[in-house]
Length: 266
Ligand SMILES: [Zn+2]
Image (tube, rainbow, N blue to C red; front, side, top):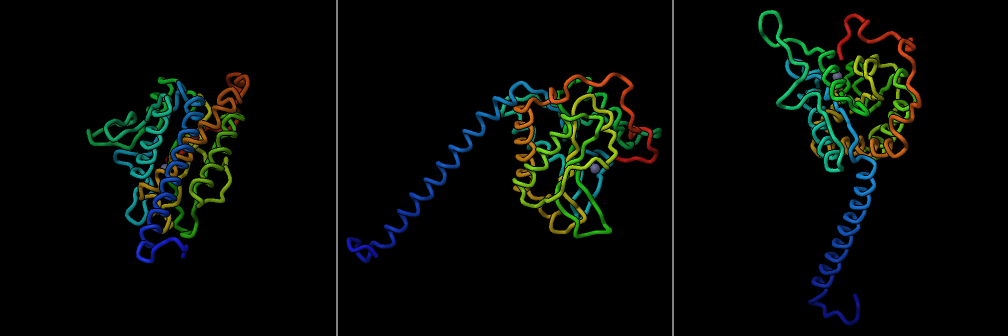
């Protein structure tokens, strides 16, 4: 206790000191936020970014503990769209709550499975600089498996590899929930057929009870979106699509395409 403080006023002084500390903390966060936003806006302004929230319509994708992949990835994608839009980027969402470019009817007129080629055609027509696919994982044989992981295809060149590495690092930093490394083993139509650098972000495992809970929470969805947003800003700052140099000549891509793999579901 300080000598000049009347015993009865101790609590008031302590409360004022706490309030001052809280205000300083808020100011520090706001300053940092403004600083980050300015550099992000410089890197992202005018960039054309396509986001594909996987699945949708009659296809919920993976699910676990009452959480559906199609819902989680749409929520993350909408948040990412808002962040990018605020930084001045142009965003194309391949699926929104109102629109699904891949929606089609089966031969009986009912809702059919979505067709990735229709979605890819819409993305190609919009001519983005980069494509980010958002999915969630499930591995029932290993319920302890967890953590976000980024996939890319070698056909996307060094620009895709670099975006995958940056995104993986940002996911680790923002969520504190993953030690995974970027990977090429996922054969994904939306990576193989993308005309521009592309990554697929598996945001976590719905087969893991704890992570399914995280993925359903708006606070965690926000962290995931901020990780992807920050990664895109860093990537464009480094050169973005230009990291690929000259594109390979047509027909130089040797790897089998996902469209040739039978039974594949995104
Ligand atoms: Zn999926």
